[in-house]
Image 1 (cartoon, rainbow, N blue to C red):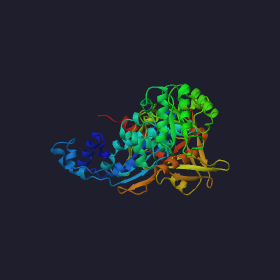
Image 2 (cartoon, rainbow, N blue to C red):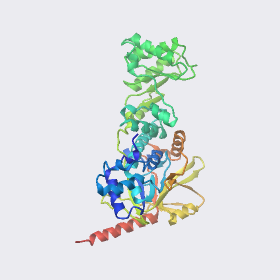
Image 3 (tube, helix red, strand yellow):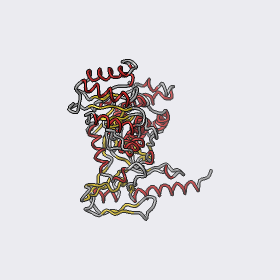
Length: 494
């Protein structure tokens, strides 16, 4: 099997050799994984992939020296290859929980360890997190477009088996009720769902009577299971719905069938067809027969179907979720923020690419509303141990200021708020130090977290932006480093 720890770029290892040869390999580095902008003008992103990252980190150092010779050949690399074959990660990792809602610039994962060990994690870590967070964030958008269940059906469109399997996992965390992927179901204990394709119907003969035979045979071979019949192979209203009702009636399936039964529409005007099917089903006594819709759906189409009053009980969504179709490339980056206790940053003329230096921690501030319960009010990222961190940890009064407009501020009085850190230590000394949550627990955590944001912050179009700031100490540190660099650059000459 492929060792994902080495799904990497060569420059991680050319840099590593320089660290090794220059005696820098044991310098303590801190790297932050974060993103700069959420896709599709979303307010935020959904965290998924942390468990796979920890598994990947644990597999570092499990390859023989001759493996490294394939991309680091020659005698000059011999000693370094031997080192790499034994190099395990020995540092600490801090991370947000899977199912957490993360905002731009907040550290999703913080890696603290010897610089060479931390550096080589960049590419495989970004590969895992960018894929799963893209899928999870898109799934969240799709599921927020409706109050009805959404199934993930995108394996055939995913970018390979690994993407299909873990993408389905990410989609379930972020709101999907189930997946068609059997490997995801087996690996994560969430089960899988599915009934038939058009080829099943046509295999019984390309005729109206063949369609009835297909439905009848399916019911007989799947009795005491949920039943969904695909009715649009030939004509949804003129024969499909009629053959479905006929087959159900002949096999004694009606509203008393406790496992659930229904029909699926996969083409045509879904709003019109669903309403007509609902009318026909109700008139014939099939009032609990559910209508399931598929066919290149996304959050915008689903929202439009809901506005039109479509009689659809649940949706199946494929490529829009599996490939995060509108925004397939998520923007997580992995940046060095501190080396041997000295905060560092990458300066850029593009303001959006300016990073926060130093060893950080983010707090989510909550207030209790008499009617709405606990409501998230703000996130603030601090330098660990700075003055604001101490005030928050001690429950004291504090004020946070908008980084881009210092005249915008918000004060939280002592006794009026609660706070929790978003990044927790998940690996200590190279070993996992927290229990693994089940997929069901991750999904429940996401669902609960989402409900603590206001409806205006959860909406898909023009969401109200949640307050996200940094501490004064972090702001001052960043500006001091930038001002010093600018002065050095302006005075630099050969």
